[in-house]
Length: 149
Image (cartoon, rainbow, N blue to C red; front, side, top):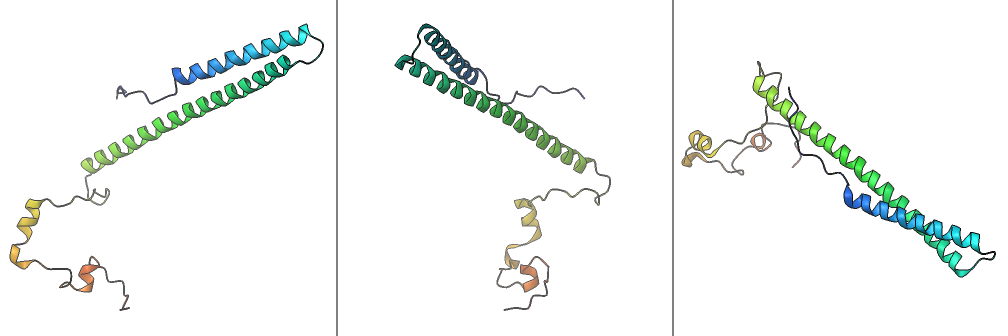
């Protein structure tokens, strides 16, 4: 059977990649700036501290955004697989119920009787309320042997 064209699952794309790349560019800029400052001067200055702080911060932000994007990508793939599996299971159950040769192999889905079936079963005069029924009828025909009252 040919694979049908299904819509592609959500995967983090251009926006997430843009922020990861932007953080990488800023981190590279700060690291280059820090390298230039260290090579030009002998003592530590306030600009070197600022460049080091910016380099470390933007590197960590880039790593965190990259990890978040990877986790979103993996979650999107898992979600698409679960959805496909659920559709396949429900389709297989539907076709198995329709193709069953004997009623003993497949449990059919419960179907609520329509209004037309109810009208044919009872007339308006023989309605039974819950209070008029016996205990076994209220339990759905199951007698649990429970005699507590």
